Structures are given as C-alpha cells and as structure tokens.
Length: 88
Image (cartoon, rainbow, N blue to C red; front, side, top):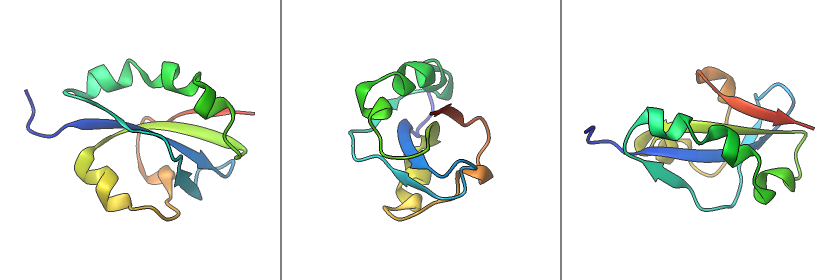
C-alpha cells in the first residue's frame, strides 16, 4: 500500500481546462490510483457534477498532497494527465 492517499476531486472549468475551480463537495479518497480511476465516470454522473455552473466538469485523481497544493483558487488542469471530463 502506498503511504499517500489518492483523492478524487471534481472541478468546474473553462472548456479547455485551463481555468478550473474545485467544486465545493466532499473529496473521496482511495488507497490506490487504480481504485480512484475506476470511480471517475461515476463521479461525473453525480448530481453535484451535473448541476455545476461551469461549461465543463473534470474529475481528477490526485494525491492528497497535490490536491492541497492546488489550494482553493483557480487552477490549470491541463498540466495533469488522465483528466476525465463531462462537457455540456
């Protein structure tokens, strides 16, 4: 088991993913990146994701350290790999 937990977070973003803010919902954590990745599509189908006031909603698996480093402001998700999104 890895010492770092993996967080599944949802972000409301511009269409290109360069201007994103974390949605104000609880973050789920997983012991492995694979376990988190298996839940990405489910997270995008939640009411929180569907009701977000953003052109695009992205789901991202990050270490809890990465997520904390992003803070609460606007972030650029284009610098992360394997971002899953649901465009409206």
